[in-house]
Image (cartoon, rainbow over all chains, first blue to last red; front, side, top):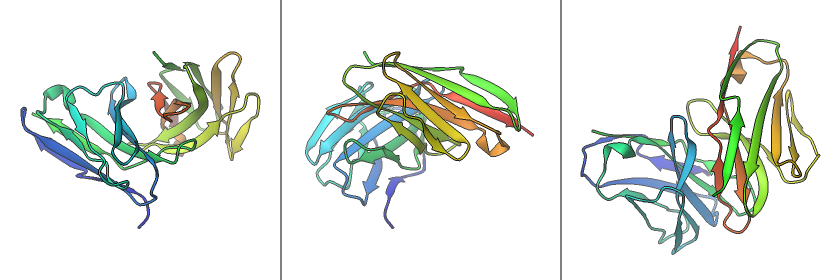
Length: 111
Length: 111
């Protein structure tokens, strides 16, 4: 099915563990984004990518790593999870000057 | 630093009331202003406003952008309980096509 899918939907992990959140889109959109959503903050940009092998930092990149070896995939890795990274993570894609379409989100809890 | 501010942060209305949500922005390289609706899952797209003074409508929802005064409003007329949600305003920047979000307005519509 066409769309943007995130996995897993829910994840509980321990402090210090490495965690990877997956994002896959079927539209071949050039741009992909990772946002985190916390109460009172709306959505904040973590990293974005304008094309395969091109990534750049957003507003809150510390503690996160991304890669984009293929246009359709944009995984987000927490290298050593901390409690402050407990959040809902949304992946989005767009073709430049049009609206972002969001995935269903991953609710991550770090204990 | 780009800034998007929404007001009010929350409001409670009764079915049939009209709601006006506000969004002001201070953004370099501004391209467009977007409104999303979020109901405990992924944000869903409502409007994208690029030109000043042109109202966009979809059913009971409408929105307009003022690029001189740097704000936008979202109106919901004849509210229904299904309109209960968080409404997010975001600015889209030229070139990198990132979204900067406001904190959102939580609308609760009581029967």
